[in-house]
Length: 225
Image 1 (cartoon, rainbow, N blue to C red):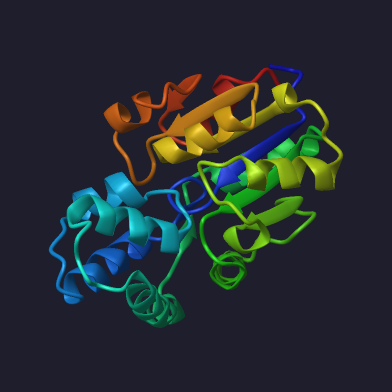
Image 2: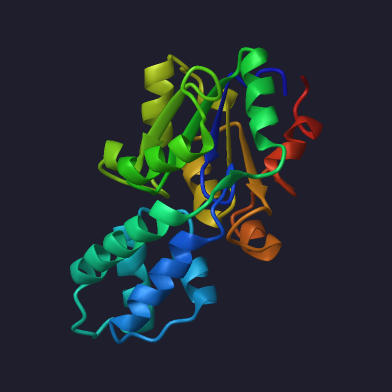
């Protein structure tokens, strides 16, 4: 896989262990709104997506006729998540920071992309002490594009910014099926599902990634570097 020039990594569950706080918060807020839903269903329908879209998709699946306002849920979600993150200890997925640094050493561009807002994403990066141009080359968030996953806009924006012109030289990795769909919609040469986060092997298989691995710590096993 020596032709890979850029990797695009999802954040929560793929590069960062934040104990599923986002989806646990979504679960809590949606249930408190009066719409009963399981955490498993929240992970199934919401993992990897821009979070307002995730809320709308969950509502539409559970009770499309409900009068519950998704904007109200989203507002409550943002407030609760800000509070959770203010006290949450987050860590890299074991071995992932070393993988990122190794990729950088090899001249491969490292992009972080996420369905989070820019504010939340930068809060996480600050907690990890990850620095632009040291650990990664570019951060692209849901705030930077009109259409979130599974649309390819975040990957295409990163390619344009880093002057990577052939999508076949791009590898996309994430812990949800929608990450894989995003990579395929961008025509990435390689898509990788990781088992370190939100979804199961069976859920990842449904999106037919090129590879499924335990975590990005073992990415070198499928890359020739």
